[in-house]
Length: 387
Image (cartoon, rainbow, N blue to C red; front, side, top):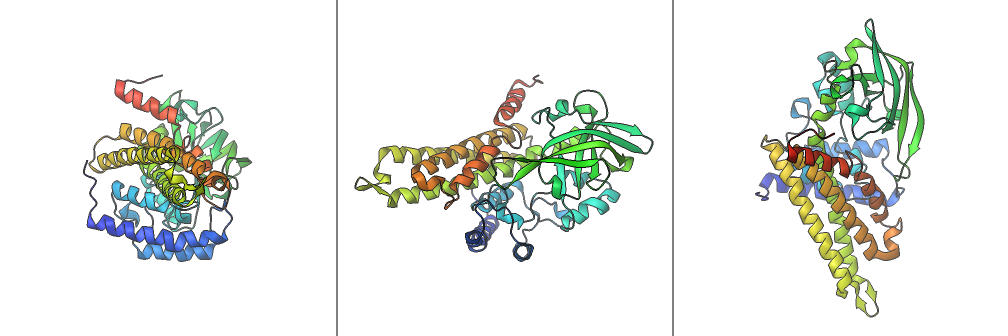
């Protein structure tokens, strides 16, 4: 695989790298170590700069105002954007546009006018409601939320769990069972959070300290038939269509943090002395740095292999699963070793390592746990549907 960068890619990397180092990292000196957002005024200033760079709305197709960049370049940007304290949860504090509900690009024109375009303009926030208490790794079969047709409406009842941002959203995508068991019986609905029957039951705190997920309760929630996204029974296909593509920059973000953690550990090992010699002179430390380097290089090759195949229009589901599996597992080990090299300083909130450690632990589960990625890879290797 040709890893040579084009002149345009080098220019983009340089712009993003300078933006992170000059605009993002300095402002974190005055933020709580677990902060995931900046003031609206500061965000507007940052967004103005990313718009000047022509890189705002990274995950938005060009026909909707986003930059026309390929997935390889998108991964290069993701690596740079994640190299700061909040880089794994809120890369650059959403200055580049943040995550979008990509499924809404398949909406009807009426739905786009009401939901998609206001979201792209920053006027509305959305959530993605797929996972349930019964399980999130196999949503096609685990979904128990039911939707029953009642004239020109559907009545939804059920519970959604591990949903990010539902308590701050204006609407969201809710996946409910409208047919029999299996993936073909799931339909996607656009649901407004102010409708009667929609309730955020509780906040679920996680390793992310200040960050949390929510549990949603749907009780006789009436949703107009025209708020079906796509077609009846096509919900799982809508949810799954872009997952493989989204996993690749997701993996690249992990790689970016690993690169930064390794860089910090390498530099620290040269200046920290123990028993009359720098840590870098100790074979045990040298081997940890070597293992870091190997883990990073292996993950980088797999991430860009998946991205390159996607850009060529080739099937890349297996490559995407491998990239996600290796990048999250390897990057977690790199951060862990880097914390160990820093000793007590590594677990202090004076440095970003302890937050990266918590975030990286979650990344091994988010977007499909490592075990599920292995299941996907095995299924593709054997070319059959595994139960």
